[in-house]
Image 1 (cartoon, rainbow, N blue to C red):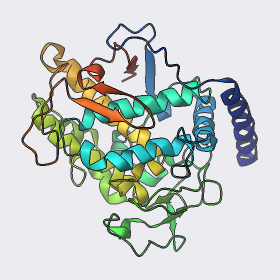
Image 2: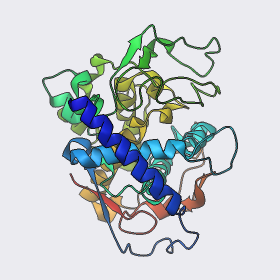
Image 3: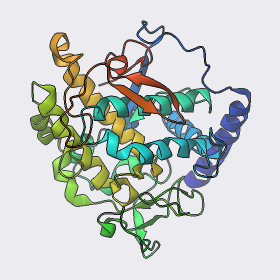
Image 4: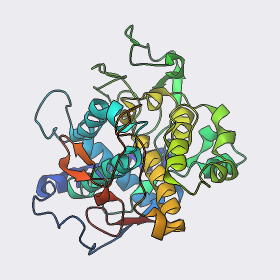
Length: 342
């Protein structure tokens, strides 16, 4: 009965939001001036702290974005949801293991959040996933509310339901691709990804392989020790490391396509994970705003010598206008306009 009620609610919300998206227009070209004070500050909240009705509404908005046509009208990507994934795939080497990693992903997730609101009518808080709560919990990671089949994003993949493509050139560690998700709103048969794994273009299910071995590294005490640095260079290296760093913990814990350097945004959890990383960065900035609010460092290219500065231009093809690193540093100014409920 609970599942039936959930399906009825989700169907109603999907129809409502899709109807709203017909009436709504994409983000206006008359955007407020970058750097101007925000007229409204949105408060992002942890998934567990959001009302159930808002969780269902958020999921319905994501499904709405998956149904809207791509901004370029092309086959690949085939939807607004995939516009964001395609941008990440195209720019992967330019936005990871570099100084602009955190600023670029901050703006990517903010653009995604705005699309959910402006194009799909979502009105609730934008959620992040604080997986340190799961690290501190006594229950398995797979039992986290984030993986709930009714009010969450569905569970792990089921072995034997997915075959990794023969071309694994951009699919490192294919053993993490356990199988297709069989529960929840993005289960096999309901959601089909068209981009990925890696740089491939293939129709496939949402692939996961929740890995409990990463749970101890998610504990709040372990995270706090890693982000205790006082300079941005040390902080960004600890965060950005996809293999052993904080960035990699959330990806590896979910497993499947979330572990893919390029196509990870095929999983809607990508945005909740990266919003949590952004929360950590904002907390770090706020501990000493006079010195940290506009602190940046790191190479502009992987292994390069030229350092990222406040004037470094970041591009977002398919998604919006270019912005500089400086533009996204202060959340109280346009185009950011959000904060976090800690």
